[in-house]
Image (cartoon, rainbow over all chains, first blue to last red; front, side, top):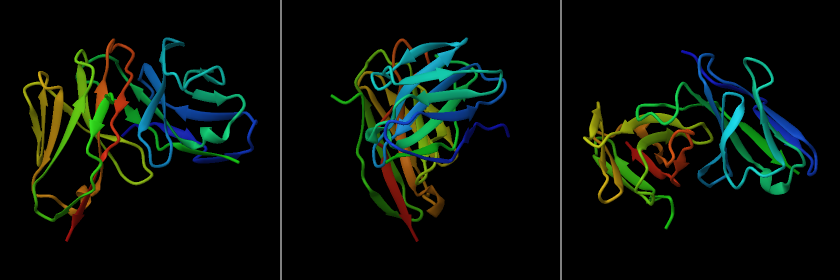
Amino acid sequence: EPEVTQTPSHQVTQMGQEVILRCVPISNHLYFYWYRQILGQKVEFLVSFYNNEISEKSEIFDDQFSVERPDGSNFTLKIRSTKLEDSAMYFCASSPLAGVDTDTQYFGPGTRLTVL
Amino acid sequence: RKEVEQDPGPFNVPEGATVAFNCTYSNSASQSFFWYRQDCRKEPKLLMSVYSSGNEDGRFTAQLNRASQYISLLIRDSKLSDSATYLCVVNPPPGNTGKLIFGQGTTLQVKP
């Protein structure tokens, strides 16, 4: 069964450093997403991406964040200057369609980001 | 009012029990509704979509009440493997960006 993959599984970085989290969505999917979950809290939407552009972003997704689909398979989330409060599990997801009642988003296993 | 609100639990039930979870959502224009399951430190996985007519998948039944902005999940004949956090999830308007809003989750612990 096709699945979303993410690398690395755990990333430790120093405050102020740039990090890039990588995702390989399911191959025939057209919509891509990033979510985050701070330990003990709910899953929060960051951004959705379609046709090589952002279709919606949350208030969390400020100028420090960017997304890119550099080739036909990878989808990346960059945090330019990490802060302590960026420590969280980051989930990538993909779906074949959006806004359809029976649509399903498939989530990757996540990257745990620890900012020291 | 929170966008999606759930009783966090935990619900501790014996094997074989029937348990029900409830959820309310704030945006009456929301169109799509889901229950996801999340095991500890793992990714959310779709359990089932929720339709206005209600739907059933084996031991799991989901109901949607649009007038009350209320979603429910019923689990019959609980198994030890049902122990997890159950996430109520809503796709708010405009809907066509795929954004999902998650509730805090309800923790279920099924005991032998």
